Length: 223
Image (cartoon, rainbow, N blue to C red; front, side):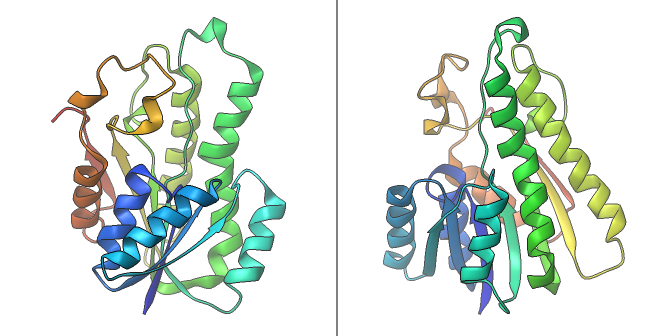
């Protein structure tokens, strides 16, 4: 059975991707920082007839990445790696903090880069990496300067790998989607009405439908 690793897999888009892919023959391995949400998401996938496992992992930590792979993926091939974990802080640039800057770059860019490098030996010849980037990786946005900067970094990484591995069995897909109606906005007033946004399920279905044929997927936020 093919294995898919999904970071940020305990809720929102990550969980929905796991549910859909489990119905397409993937054994799902969810990772994230919250054991409770990971356990719940894994149970939901199993309840729907899929196979799922989970492990806590803070992708900001090189030590945790190394330990995670040693414990779960030594000599185990991976068909699909989805970098879905992300964090955002929004507001005027002059009110941003250095902690926010570091947290966003470590989570949104450095984490996926480090995990990709560490996991390359386990990727199969016909495997795929999907970078969940957001439309913030396509254009600048007001009151999102640092978030956009971190997403542009991941975009550049993904596009460069596409060129580096062109003609090999490893595919890299960059997915750019707008805001979704998820708990991501619970502690933010940046989006006044999240209900007008697409649901995680809808976005997950669009990504799964397109990723095998496209190297770039763009999904705008409005329904």
